[in-house]
Length: 462
Image (tube, rainbow, N blue to C red; front, top):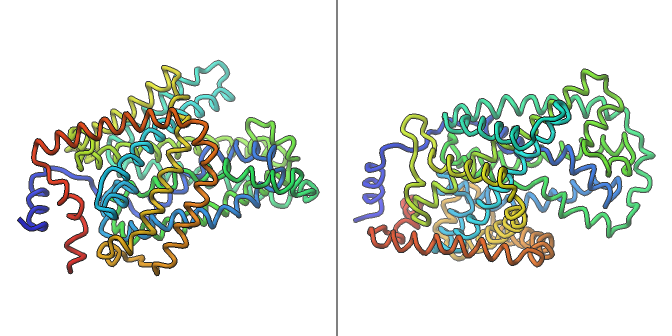
């Protein structure tokens, strides 16, 4: 049977699939909304304890590293692989023609997303206690997570509407914070720019890089975005550039209106900054914006794990029932329910620490393996490379990949050494699930080799 015929038969047997209801606005709201999260409202000030007022400069220095890391997504998403979710897992496995490296990297990333959802939900609950003293942060976090569970369940169009609406409120809050804050900047707060020397400045870059963590979430919308191969690479480039400008502007205003010593000990840095030059009503808008920073991040982050599980299940890396798509809402309901349930369990059992210990390492490992796939693409799988609409010269791919890999290794070395035991534990769990599912798949006659080429082979041959 030809690959085309096999694919037609496979599609005919599939009753429902994802629905392409997301456009360009929803894509930008997903990318920037996930990135302009709670971190910029809190972590920016804390970084001042390490780098002093040079934090805005640190955000700019990270821009080339982030773009080099994103090049892999721009290239791979412009191939036929950009028509479905799966992100780095699909890109890595189809480049090398083997499953395990991409699977284990994405498995660890799924674990990391569970930790991120728990932290974001708990952070939202803790933030609410500033307005409602005595509120239970875990209960509030659970309620907001359940709210977005239903938003994500009821269809990607509902998800998109909610994300765009919250994103617009967030952007209004950013403008209210930044525009009046620029004339109020006191440049004397920037002297000296490096109070802790170059060592302090460089030490702040790895934790600040976490502000860009999660940008790859956008890749999981590929199966539900119109003209994904053309639009998503552009959204990555423009959206990340806009995010850098926002980060720089917000941090420049923050360190220009409060001494870094004060910001370093603030639990609500941006709210404290806004209180210096904004009337109460405008300051309240900034507070609402901070809440939108949490909610856009929770909504966008919750969209990712179900699609990761769905794609892994479609490839029979994990049990096949996780690939189920709701016939009414056209969303991966089983995977969404399990992902939400795991995040809630982590919240209520207070076991987030067991996940958080590997969250950062999982991100760095994924970026490293993805960068290796980018470097190897034109040499290991030239047929797939030729299908890319964003077909950069192989030399540029090698340079981008090497810069990204070197930075990730530098950022992650100390963290991986500190938490290698937990990392190995999660690798062992993921490997056990992988081996069992591969065994079951072979027993049922699943064609693993055909699966590796069916998304892109026809176009490559044409």
